[in-house]
Image 1 (cartoon, rainbow, N blue to C red):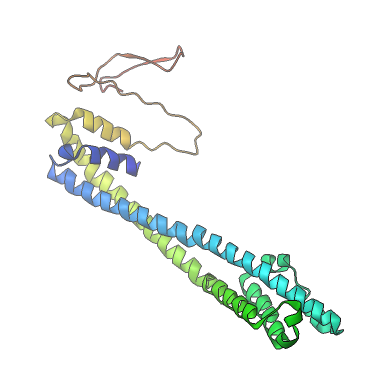
Image 2 (image 1 turned 90 degrees about the horizontal axis):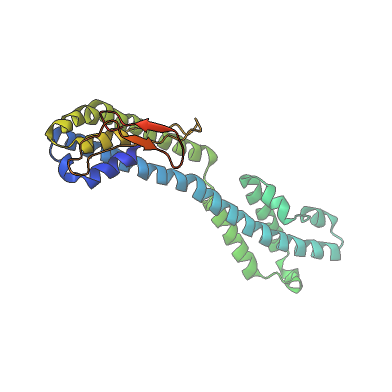
Length: 246
C-alpha cells in the first residue's frame, strides 16, 4: 500500500504540489518509506547474507579440515598412535553438523595436531604452507561468525526501529494526507482523489480472497459515471457502478 501511494503521487507531482499541506505531508511520508525500505534491505543482509556466507565458509572448512584429519589419521596409524587416530577420526559431516564454536574448536585441533607433526607429514602431502592456508580459513570463518547475542540484539533493535517508522508513516497517512486529500475533489482533481483512496486499500493476504475493484470515469472529464454495468470476463455476475464510479 505504501508503494502504491508513492507511485501515484510521483506520477502526479503537479497535482500533489497544488496543496502545500498535502505536499509537505507526502514528502514526510516518502522519507519514512524510503527509510523503512533501507532498513528492510539491511535486515535481509544481516540474516540471509550472513547465513549464506557462514554456510559457504563452514563447507570449505569441513572439506579441507576432514582431508587434513584423514592424512594425520593415516600417519597415526602408521606409527601405531591410537590416541592420534581417535582424535583425527573426523569427517566433513562432523564439522558441518557442529555449532559455530565447535567448528572452530575442531578445526583448531586438527591444525595444531598437524602442525606438531608437520615434519613427518610431508610424505602424506601436508606442508607448512598448506597448514598456513588452513589456519587463515579458520580465522576467516571466525570473522564471519558474529557473537550470537550481539547479532540477535542488533536485529531486534533494527526491527523495533522499523516498527516505529511504520507507525509514524501510518500516522502521516491517517492524520494528514487522508484528511487534506479531500480538498482535491473540489479543485478539479476528482480522478486523482479516487485513485488515491483506491491506493489506500489494504488487501488482507491471510483472507485468501481476490478483490476486484473497478473505477468508471468519463474519458473526457474524468468524472465518475453512475449505473454502468460491469462484468468479469464471461461471468453473468454484474455490478452497477455507483455515483463515485466504483
